[in-house]
Image (tube, rainbow, N blue to C red; front, top):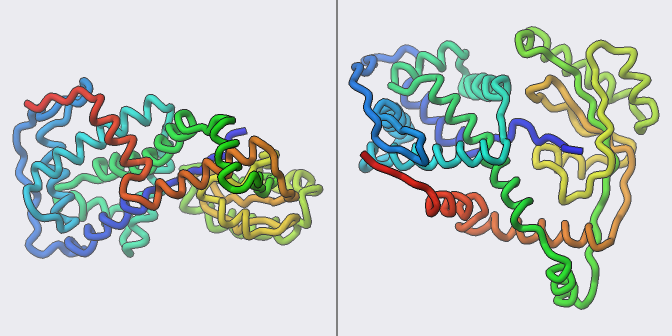
Length: 319
């Protein structure tokens, strides 16, 4: 069963954009709207055009990020990379829901003590539209999922690889924890999120306090409105999604994770039970997780490696 890691948002996406609110606070003294200019196709990436309008907007965003140097070139290169990323996301079937993007945009505004209309106005006056920022957010959120999909399909360890790694460790087969999980979702419709989410989070916390194991999860949920319970089955530690991994590993059997806001509403995970497993499949998962951790610590991480591969195989025509 697929265990969603929703709202995965590369931290860089928020970190670099923080300069928006520093560089252009509400009030906008002396700010002027950018003049309209003709739009032409500047680059074609595997048949996908990148326009001069997009480049001008991205250059404005780079300026807000306090980048220096040739901003037009940097903006063009960044947009070419994002075109490649979006194409790979489509190829991998990675789709970020509109409501997830809108929630990320709203969260960003709140983190910077702005309302959504205020943030929209800040971006507009700076020459970078809210729509362009949301496109940027969508790619930041989906790229990590595309990289993980690529790793799962291309980097699976063979039986011989596992044997070799065990021999290197003196023949010892690694073990890992396997969790039996339930997912509890207090559903919040997107158009009612602002008015309902806080109350639904309180209701979810109330249900958490009543749970002692997973035997009564469905019975309790039936007494509540718009609550979904999903049996996720057995999930090994290396397969836990990043969003929930630490919380699940910190929860004891019979307990739950803290409530999290997601694009679906308010959610928590119930840890029904745990056990240690040590077989060929789990060994392969452990070794693969170790390899991914090594890659992630280096400058040539899996995301860079995939992007380099896409650049090498792409047909990029600069006008």
